[in-house]
Length: 414
Image (cartoon, rainbow, N blue to C red; front, side, top):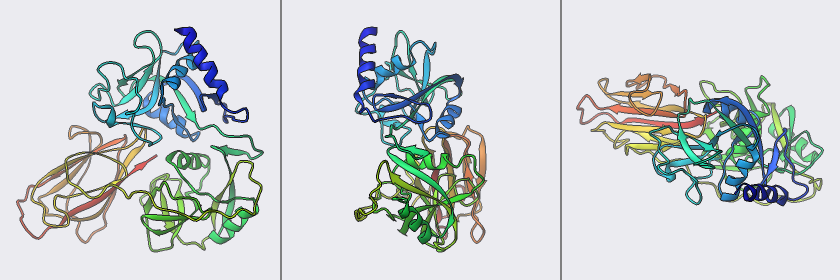
């Protein structure tokens, strides 16, 4: 069996094209880039270590990758490693990969009796013995070794190379001037097409003092973005669509108004630090970009069905915007080590009715805040310390008319 695993690992390692490389000291395995961090850490610290280099905890989505992981850590003395997988229920369809690309419904290697979120919502990979190579739920506060994952890329002379693109950080310019400078480098203002790329771009500013940077999108509405390079809009992290302008900025810090990693609209003429993006090896500046196409789905619609909701989304009181006549509970969840940020867009409730927010997945978790009616006053934003927040709306008043309830938007925060 060990020989079979070793041969699978070797074949997988050399199967990638000769020009495929990994950056940041990662090793190419099965067209993935992996790096072992043997020093044990809890799941949150492990996730954040990976995020700081623009990656995620490792994910195996087929049997070949799952076997290769055992060979990759062989000889290191490591017996268990955190995975980039998080479960909010006891069925594999309620487990989510850190790259935000679905659940392990096509392939999984959970040990018998798992997933079991009652044991713990985080998932680790068991290396040796039985259950060797199997996935097991564990308490997220446990300290285990871990493997980070980056996408492979191709060689180029640029300093910042990620997933077959070069990135260049440049000093403050208006939107139009920034785009011209990027075109002179055979690129464009950066377009962002996945949560992984969004994390990576945020990570390259981890040592800077900038609060935000300019990216290459124009939001024609809260649901549609046009990228300067003409690429398809297949991902969005737009948090705030305002009236001060329609050019996109990426927030590098969590503030009262913006979440770290989120996008917001702003003035197009204000000089701002920006990022150019060029495909690897593409020095042909005469190509005409394709026209933009359709937008991705909008966030989850307002609802008051008690249950668990993955960020981003919207929650609302029963029958919103009509009169509510019942209580409601919501469990908000996000990926990996991210946090939940909830912003109340509107509240008009009886002073006897209360919205309670808890820092966890039940009303037994620490209380974050209790929000009463704030009609006519400034609404606030609240952030969890982990990747779940439990919200409970308690209908105490018995009111049958005159109150339209509340509406809140929740996002995933780095």
